[in-house]
Image 1: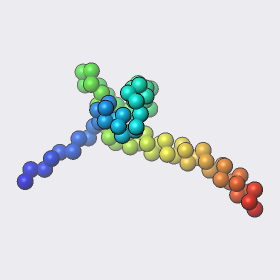
Image 2 (image 1 turned 120 degrees about the vertical axis):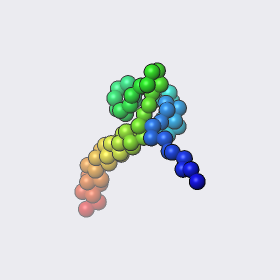
Image 3 (image 1 turned 45 degrees about the horizontal axis):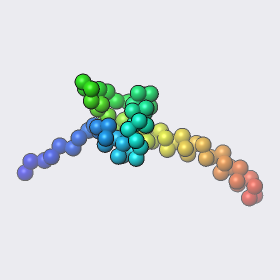
Image 4 (image 1 turned 30 degrees about the vertical axis):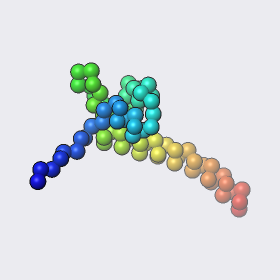
Amino acid sequence: MEEKLQPKVYSIGELCTVLDVGRNTAYDLLNSGEIRAFKMGTTWKIPISNVDEYLNNQCNKYAESIKPKKKEMCKIIN
């Protein structure tokens, strides 16, 4: 049986679906370099690993932003 290869890159449409964002936001993320990608001709190729990296960075930023708030809540409770 022949195995089907899994794509290692997203298209712009797939990126929009995965992140649940519009095309303008997706292009902004690519053009700003927040998500590393490249073009082949006029078509964006977005490595899945780079999207995963972006999502992990966003989660870490959020986690860091709430830590001080949790500490303040602990002081109030105690």
